[in-house]
Length: 390
Ligand code: CAA
Image 1 (cartoon, helix red, strand yellow):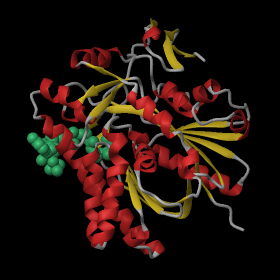
Image 2 (cartoon, protein in one colour):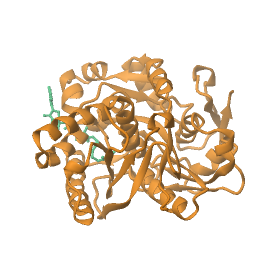
Image 3 (spheres, helix red, strand yellow):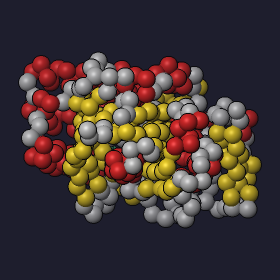
Image 4 (cartoon, protein in one colour):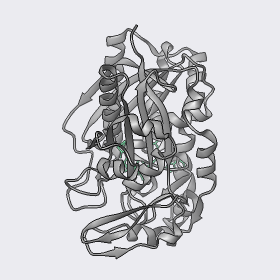
């Protein structure tokens, strides 16, 4: 019998602060409707200096890992484009914080927003040949464009942690996918810069072109059509982007299917609308949002489109499993989002400047203001000081 492999559990974390997009629009002299409707964002996560991708990943992963899982994890694949070191992998810090066994491989994967999908596919391939192993896959990022830039409204941050296993509870991956790479300068972050450079309009066109390419190729490989799908989840740097992607293929569906796929899309963008861009984690927050809010049935096929600027696109699919709701903590995600505090634009701008700088000087951070279990206490001798409060 063929072993099914895929996503067994999902955990999500975003910090306790957010910025309301009406407040940002007013401060920038823009019409709030442009942000809420034109871009499709209502709130944006604000990342305090006490959180980075390592702590956010630990806060997401700790929600799903049991002591038994911790013992059987054989690999940590950490997708991020907000790494904290040019040499040492974020996955090594994470494995230590989570107290994972020493016989674990821990590496970081970088290809813009695509890194977590690469991790997921590598993990699935590994589990297919080692069915008792579990792999922890992370997508964690801080989306930073800079104050008063066109990209400012598309910032955000957070982490999604996924456990990839045989006989998964959430999504069994179809062993086929379609991917496409081209050397494109649509978004990049040269060494030494903490904010991305982006050709915004061009990046949205490349995203859509790549989606068309991989969707067409996937159909040719599988002979499936849009009628085979109950829902799609997209990489959502801002929710209008996913809406545009869906609109590209909706004409292929019957009117009834169009209604169902549009309703599923609405479910898949609800949480992203309130968190903002997570770069590597965005597709996976969208998938989680779909699972949380969508009207899905076990056996439904879900299509996932991943895009990382620079650029790489991939389309893959999976079948929803009977007990999929047991693979994530719906109430915990709702509570995490509901308990956040709104910051003023002035406070957001101050926090934006406080992110740990690239100078390497020693610093102690105001840890008492951050309620997260895992946090960054500061930097000493060029080393980040990670802490855990139970
Ligand atoms: N009411 C309603 N809608 C309004 C409006 C109003 N008052 N004013 C403007 N709009 C609409 C516009 O019509 C437009 O809609 P369409 O795209 O459907 O035409 C939308 O709001 C945006 O308006 P603009 O194009 O004028 O916005 P902008 O010039 O400020 O830039 C952006 C928008 C290019 C997305 C910019 O925010 C940006 O550069 N973002 C970062 C880049 C990005 O996220 N790219 C996505 C693909 S790359 C990727 O996916 C990797 C990654 O994560 C970065």
